[in-house]
Amino acid sequence: MLSTLGVAVTALLTALFCHFALGFSVLESFLTGAVISSTDAASVFSILRSKKLGLRNHTASLLEVESGSNDPASYMLTVIALSLMGVGGGGAIPWMIFAQVVFGLGLGAAVAGLSILVLRRLTLSDGLDTIFVVAAALLSFALPAVVGGNGYLGAYLAGILIGNAKIPHKAALVHFFDGLTGLAQILIFFLLGLLSFPRQLPAVFLPALAIMVFLTFVARPAAVFLLLAPFRCGVRQCLLVSWAGLRGAASIVFAIMAVASGAAIGYDLFHIVFCIALLSVAVQGSLLPLAARKLDMVDSAESVSRTFNDYQDQRQLHLTRFPIGAGHPWVGRTIGECELPADALVVMLRRGSENVIPNGDTAIQAGDLMVLSTPLYEDDDGVSLREVPVAEHGDWIGRPIKELGIPAEVLIVLVRRADGTTVVPKGGTVLQQGDMLVVNEWEET
Image 1: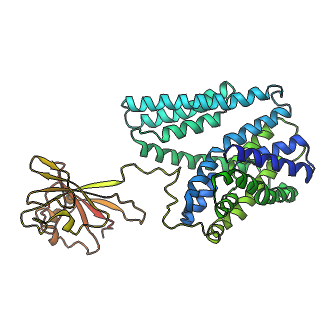
Image 2: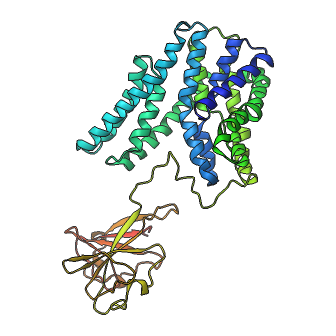
């Protein structure tokens, strides 16, 4: 709702303000409202992530879905405005709206469906799946654009469908596209630097400030409260969503498109939109963490990294094998009597050739192989591992680990033998020729 009707309401109210308060013509006012009607996901989540602000009531996910999906609607309004101004002809606007939506959705879904089928059915070698998905992204934009559809809508829908499908190597794909997104942002801001002239900003500062204030305190809140009220969203949530409607790179790109289209625009649209984006990020962005706290919308239990854009590998549990020897103190006790960590779960007991699915009353026997599930560790604290070849330390070969004289703050996590087997080390583990030690961060002197 916010990404479609919200964009339309924001554009309409802004157009009325530009026409009656700033004296722009009707079509120029509509063009201005269309260009700046979308919000910028990158700006919002850069702020939320840097401050580690989790928001209540799934507000973070709401903001990211809205910010990511309202660009196609803003683009369509911009194309309609340019068509009314004589760029491309204005007589086919009903057909244009139909084609933009139907072809964009239909072809985007078709490309996504075919891509998912190929990724699931064919075994692509490492790297080829990334190339294939890049090609699918380009195709999902190009096909709708060729037949008059909304390429942005098609690409966005294809990304949604592929991103939520169970496909191989998804984590690697997402990390690649995260890097590609960063590169695209660098190129966009480099382009903005080439096109902008700082000396022209003072001339457009007052109208840009007026539009930004109206957007922030009138147009955006009106759209948010109007469309979220039926869903019984609280006043504080609506206020925060209203304040988080930052304008960013997408609006500036649409302004560049409008200026480059050759439409007769009687004012400096590019620098007005550029100035609005700067003011929005500087004022709204700086005060967003404070607004979230003042509105009591910060939830420490929520993680802003677990949102629509930030994919985490679906296998977040790590399985660990734990052999129970004859002298182990757990022999003869039930699982419920064992002092396991709170986040560990016994998922299976391997007893000879039999697999036992345990419960709290299952008794442990000598010789059992216990399989534990524990949360997968995520390296958020800068802990790093490195490999140390035993061959580089010839005097270590044939000696137990406890005699090596390794610094006390260094832990050998794993010993990888030359034959590929791994050993969880103890003080008495004897190192062999060809061993590779995996240790926590250690700078040798």
